[in-house]
Image (cartoon, rainbow, N blue to C red):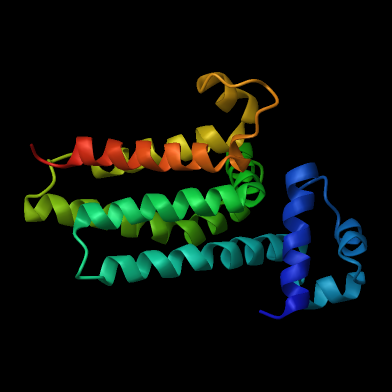
Length: 205
């Protein structure tokens, strides 16, 4: 992807996070990105296609890492899952506006076609992680757990922390002005907690 397209996508993330999909116009996006409307239309064609390109571009890095983890025969299943947690937490903290935009769109239920596209783009990552859990079960190193609900528990924790700073601060007993996403200690705390949760729930005693 060229620098100009990447710049437009990054600008779109900021505007979608601030104003939502409906509240953001191509003209406004072009102005903020300091490009003309014709360039945005040339690269993406429509606001919907821009949104889809944003999701695909921002998800590609994680997809590549998870694919490599799945194929890495030097790691055990629990080590792979620990690395998945590390990758996801770091990615979410670094790109929290993007993840907030995605989950806002998924929760609104206003554009079914766009929602389906988002799910089609991001679901392979979840399927791959689920495959790691199921592999551990088949090998007898993991308990016979409900793999999809294990995933829901982990990703639900990500979302709870990400979507509401006020709620997150309330849950972890922090002052309202605390910004958890800018605190390396909290990031490590979250990674350690989720990795410990997976070890405790999955590994046989």
